[in-house]
Length: 230
Ligand code: TMP
Image (cartoon, rainbow, N blue to C red; front, side):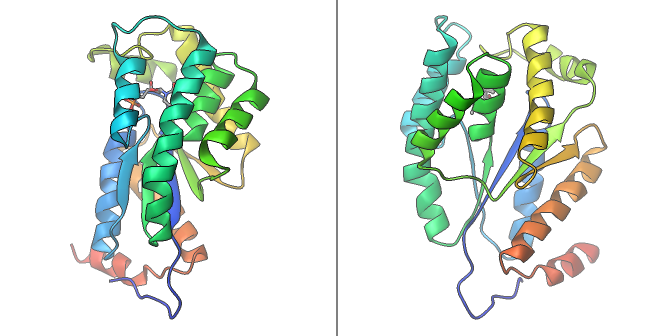
């Protein structure tokens, strides 16, 4: 059990980012379990989605049969889902002092619609700010896949959604976009090599999460002991 300090601990906002097929869902499940072992109750959620309204927008955006749209309309739809998500899910949970882990957040728009899709990055940043009221993550972990071929292999067997069905060139720009993101925002974005064995990726993510939680006043010392005795 983590030790609570005298004052109430703050909410902490963490996102996992990366290309389609980079292993985010697996790693979020593992991270969430580790936090639970530490006596914490993380809220695990995802974008687009997280609210009923957001899940409907998700369908509209990702259904393979969904009509084509301009990249700017797409950006605004992601932003509309995000606006609901932040006000109805994220902010209330953070106000209760919870750790919120989301699969994707504003950085996905920066990379997919901005860097890879061609909407100017300052426009994306303005839209993100409007949708979120300026709420940024405390930590964003990018699962970096060094080789495009790994992603192609992982996606090959899947029924692809609207975005996954885009060209290899688009997905290559997404991969590069995540690298650029980590360089542009080093204060909150860290890159983890997503090509490593799953438990090594888990350990690398955990190290980053422990760092940010320690900075916020959490003490997870005993959790490590708990894991060693598992
Ligand atoms: P996923 O939940 O299976 O990762 O699917 C979400 C898809 O939506 C994924 O291909 C990335 C894409 N996406 C964007 O293009 N922009 C965004 O802002 C977000 C949140 C996701």
